[in-house]
Length: 170
Image 1 (tube, rainbow, N blue to C red):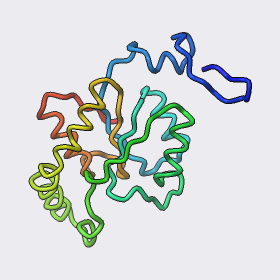
Image 2: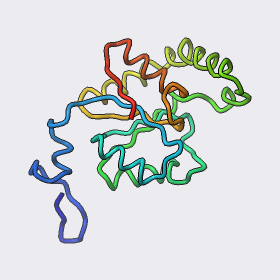
Image 3: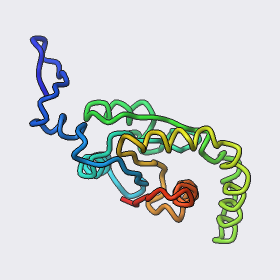
Image 4: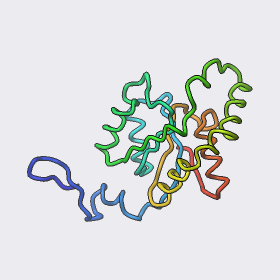
């Protein structure tokens, strides 16, 4: 990373600094999932950096959180400062109304079944965007839950895996 005469960071292509290394082909394109449940923003960002994530794809319907640092605008600011692109694909999220009243594992299983059978097939264009991002960059699919199997992003990952794409949980 270089600094201009106004004290702002500028990209360079030296491949010696960490920023240039992250953008190089030294790290293969890859797909990950990540949740921020139980994490503070510093631990979350560190995990993205350690895994060389280049694009964070937010698959929450509404990118709002009671953890202020994880609201869309604030998260986007944090990521931008670290050279990570932020993309919100809210159409891949689940509406809040459908999440109300979920109490049992069966309730969640029914919701995820509906998501897999109806909502995801209806949003293939957005799923293709996810696939395209991952062809050239290291991406992470973001939602709240700590474990992908407890979240709709696990269904997205399952769909990617069915297409022969490897997806890793952070």
